[in-house]
Length: 253
Image (cartoon, rainbow, N blue to C red; front, side, top):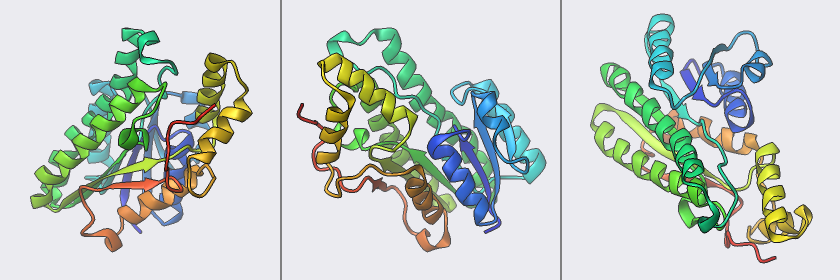
């Protein structure tokens, strides 16, 4: 694979796993992240830019660098996002709601906005948006996150329709609960709100998954690499779950 790949939110978690997996296949990767310390730990042969993926100035600079150094981009992984508040909808502050939607949805929108002209010019490209199973089922105590992730699927399906005639594909990844600090934090906050323990909340989440397991960031990354490959050349406009089959997103505690 000699693809040119941009990954937003690529300094840790799913984004970093995507970068590692694409790079292992021979791709050139550019990762952006707000956390400069996280980027500093990434391999020296990756291109790295620190900034907010929901900031148009930053994203314009990212795509200017892609044009300058690679003369284009083959795969854009719109992966940047935050968990947002964990609370019942009546307890969510409007500012926290707006922040969650902005970082998740607007970052994906900007990645697609600036990728589209570049990919149209080369008559090829793949846009992958990291949504969530919360964008398929909804999710109790996570209204801002679910709203953003549902909207990102609508964005993806529209991109697939608009860009398909130009040889460009768009798909969304829908991870389930991904092992790592983000889900640990969500579980801890939910346990506190419900007056129970994180272990009980975690067990409840796993009980709603057919395979009784969380997924790893590399499980999601492997699917991203497949969707970007020629083996998926006619896969577009789809929401691909990587979740062990979520049956019930409402853990009973």
